[in-house]
Image 1 (cartoon, rainbow, N blue to C red):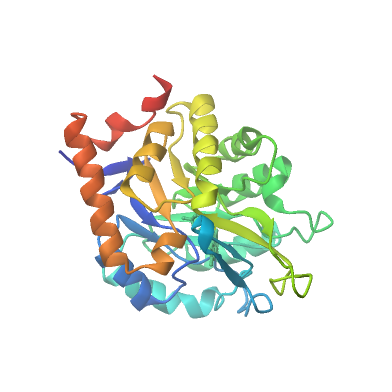
Image 2: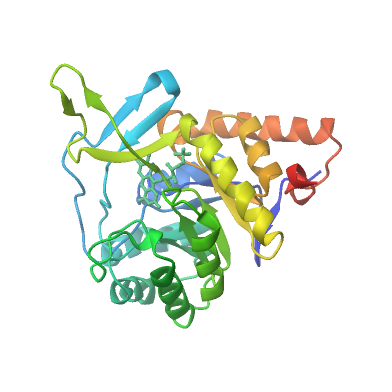
Length: 306
Ligand SMILES: Cc1cc2nc3c(=O)[nH]c(=O)nc-3n(C[C@H](O)[C@H](O)[C@H](O)COP(=O)(O)O)c2cc1C
């Protein structure tokens, strides 16, 4: 029995990937997450310039639903400073996917061109940033912008391009189709869901930014439905990576059955020791494979469609 999985030309030792954001951009934290037993890590999204992100409070725990609402914003050291940590990660043979963001095609190109010479496993394109061109609407909800940016970046790099999809659209397949037409190599679903929490005593939104993104257990059914819709439409045309609310090995299996070939795990790894969590994830997936007589991850993928 093997836990190895393939995402296009990339083979990972298992399908569990650290999701972008929760453990930042630093060499030591990302290396530790990989050594805990994950298949690969995604960095926090990197842009052109250093940014400290949004006003505090920027994260609020919704313990009763094992979820979090956050508005960290795109806090990051900028790609030039980040390069040092990235080089160390790659020297330590940590399979690394670099999440990048920009407000325009030019910004995306500058970050991508500044890092594409390094032997990274993939770029993950985070389109949740506002567009400086189109009245600051989010790039992630605009099929034309998604197509144009992916198509242009495709001509600038031979590194695989993964596109991270927002659940904040009425038809996720439409945006995904634009990304696939543009030439991406994998789809990642989903990013956080727009949300808010209000303090009933002060009568005001709790987050400094007022609105935030919901992640954790409450997001899982949305992620599962998104992956299911994408697999139903694309079948095996493009690999799908499921994200949202993974707290248990069972959640990973559910994403695989919906159509994922790998998963990304965020919030749950941000609140627990990755070493313990990842060991439990692995044990549960192996036990399920034994019980259901699966010998590879690819045999589980898409099982809910048969
Ligand atoms: C604190 C925090 C920071 C995040 N930062 C990023 C980011 O920089 N880029 C990105 O693409 N997604 C970011 N995300 C979204 C996660 O990568 C993931 O898509 C989402 O949290 C759903 O997965 P989860 O329920 O396992 O956390 C962030 C999420 C959280 C909670």
